[in-house]
Image 1 (tube, rainbow, N blue to C red):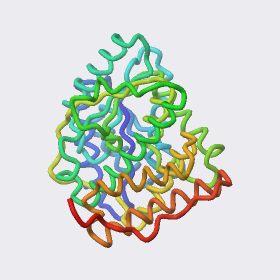
Image 2 (cartoon, rainbow, N blue to C red):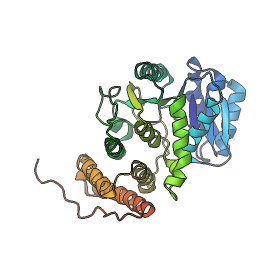
Image 3 (cartoon, helix red, strand yellow):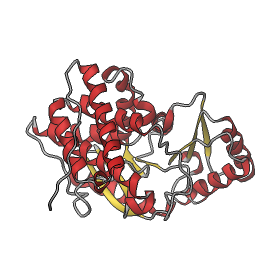
Length: 329
């Protein structure tokens, strides 16, 4: 079990310790203490809090990143460490805010095990799906997540269709048509753990100048798994009514989300004229687009992604402008 952790230096150590204890206390029911890795992502005060708690209570191990690499880098570091143990078959990631309840772990692992047995390979991963993204994140942030998830999934399907393949959705078909990609509660096999690490290691060559390691903890591994003929499954999980803690940055939203979308366009090889249409399709389905500021924000993210992908690929990309809303429905 991997818990990537970063807390602001301004946060009281007692509050950090309380969150770390809540994240790690119940994990021992599902993983051996040496296999519960709290990965501190370049946060000195958080490292001190983790060490103090471990001295008192134990029950987990600490991996410290010398510099902050973002959630993707922290998850990859934890996976690398646990992959050293050949006896581990499944790897579960959970966020540092105690929103992912440890008692949902067996459902994630059970589905992953079933998928491996039924499909006959280990290119599988499972997602702890939130029953309601909007109720959990709030309306605006939920809309941005659904928007991104749809574009990413459609781009991956486009790439697969070009080689005569379709995505295996049989293990997520009971829920929404679009995967809940951006939740941090996931289960990897050894193969998809290695896929996740490779996706981030290869990102600088594919998308130079874009910090995919920092912003790509959730989506690149799903895209890579699908493009490599793998399958993604989902199970419902419990979630707090409101996030206990959030590092979500509204000011940096365009670059963070645009970075991931640009990487997706580059990785799937989708022509940017087609990517532009996928963006417009997804925008039209979002209620947020009925608000002028929301519509502008969706367009800003889309244009940032198109521009960056176009610069890297040397492919002209027409911006999204002059947006019109449907007058009748």
